[in-house]
Length: 623
Image 1 (cartoon, rainbow, N blue to C red):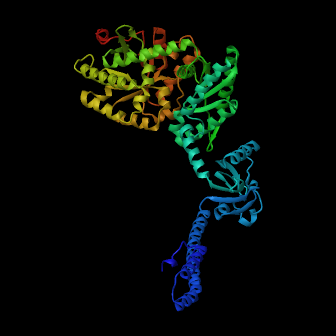
Image 2 (image 1 turned 120 degrees about the horizontal axis):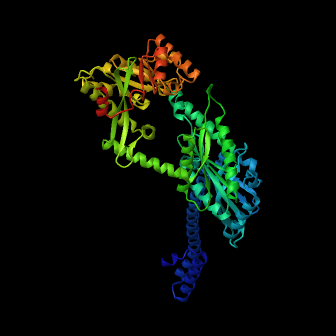
């Protein structure tokens, strides 16, 4: 029955059946067999065709199932999370998916027969689309970021991919576009960028972006042969606002200052927050002439100073702020760090000359900074190598009998010699070295009081010690004094602590409480330089004081200046009314002393009696 097999081709099957008949005719077979075969052959041909049809049906069924599977996959792919748009060769929309509707707001029936141009936002110009279509025609593919517009008018960024579909002759017959909304990705990327390059409080460029911009400014300055300038701006007394009103008020001030700075300079100038209460302004391309550029920078600095100094309204609180500005002229021959150093130096000079001003860098400023840095290094060495000495200036009563002394700090430098306190005390305050120095002075003074207790002619002496407000502001200052008293076992009433009037006024209520605790231990307090600050009777009543010290500026002119005489007389009378002792410092003549005695002053200190002396000479003076 091999003749029933074949190549599944109908023609081949029929040929095989006909060949069988011809072959049978060539054989000599019985007549009855020949008639039977002629009778069966038509049936065999029909059966062969039936088998062929069955096979073709099975093949068609298989192909149909495959097509349905592919269609199902295509349908699911078409309804993906990405928007899909299909157009014909003329860019007429034929079909969109549900994601298209979700992303754009347009239903399919609203866009069929339209072109994708209805989605344009207007942010891309005609040249952008020309480049897109040129690439599609050449490569049948384009991908990029496009800003489109939703039905509600919202403009958003999307990542768009377009593929051109061609026929067998490579003619474009369709375009398929897929796109996704990348708003969140762009926003996240922009947030990362802003966090990296912008200050989160003021939204100004931060130090990192400033350095990049400054580098570019130097390159442009060299290329264009022009001069610019950089301002280093530091707010005056900003810490006071933070300490008294809180950091939220400080943040409000910084935000307002940044706004005023932006409005005070040109749009292409850069304002940056350098850190804390420090700002930098970069002025580019002021002039090709250095002198004109300098004059222009000074005019802008004046404008900035005025803008910052106007009163601020911070949550209903009126605050007056000023700034110190250092200016450095910028040219392409400079480097970043040198420019910043010069501007910073000029800013510190502006602070030293009274604040609320601006200062142009001068080379002499750098010399001053270097001398100051050298002095600071030597002072640190002096603390560790015991180069600091205590001198003593006698204090006398109305009969010129010694009742005490003021301990004064001196610095015996191995090369500089004896360094005046006026040269290093303010530096010690600024650098924080005043804390270990102050502790050393207090401890040494108490040790000296203990030594004096052993001798009859010195056991009743009172020793006055100046302390800085930074010492008093230490949280453990009371404990430090307790520890010193415990270690030396002195009579606390023989120790008198002097605080300058201006520093007491800058202090806080916590400092008054510390003074009260120390007074309860027996320690006395004197207000030094009284009359030079802004004390009120309320402050004098609130503070636990025992003595007022009349400043030498009034005593020196008391004989020849009636106003000074009236002031001194009033101070003495006020002290008596408040039950406070009074001592006058800077007494240099007998006329001054007699006048002070007439007004009621009973204690004196000055060159009339003795200049400050080393301990051995002071002991000789007492004898």
